[in-house]
Image (tube, rainbow over all chains, first blue to last red; front, side, top):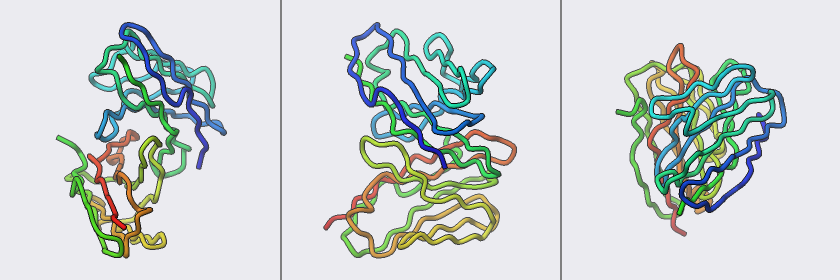
Length: 115
Length: 111
């Protein structure tokens, strides 16, 4: 397994501003993922972040809105840019520890409220 | 259309009763995962099932993977209030590494 921490745990932001969310893992992992979970909903994958390459975004998510950094094998950041109330969600990072299954382990999430 | 159809969406039962949550797909998965998520927290992995027909037990929780590796179920025996939470099934179809999630089942166990 893996122990994952996220900062901040929650934030309330004004429309038009940006917030950067940090994800730290206790071991080196190749693949890190960022998800969004809107209120009362399941998880939607935003992008896959691999160290040394550009993040791969899912349909409906773009780099200008959600820039991602992956400077090393234990850390990643997701920025939510030019926020609107529709961006209010829980943002989760996860890791695949690279065993034969596709099991992912999740951080505690960042609860974002945009006013 | 979701790749994984999870049912029911909501379950409210009395302490001591049993419950079953289903996760179905038309796709074949190399493995399926079940997670439980409590309010304000991230999903916590309960189990990964890998082999078709596999049954795994975790105390009062029993997980089953269909023979064709297209479906799975979670059965809780003698539910307790501590079992309350959002249960999510997830899996990556064969040849893919990205997880798809079911819509989730919100389970409430009343004392």
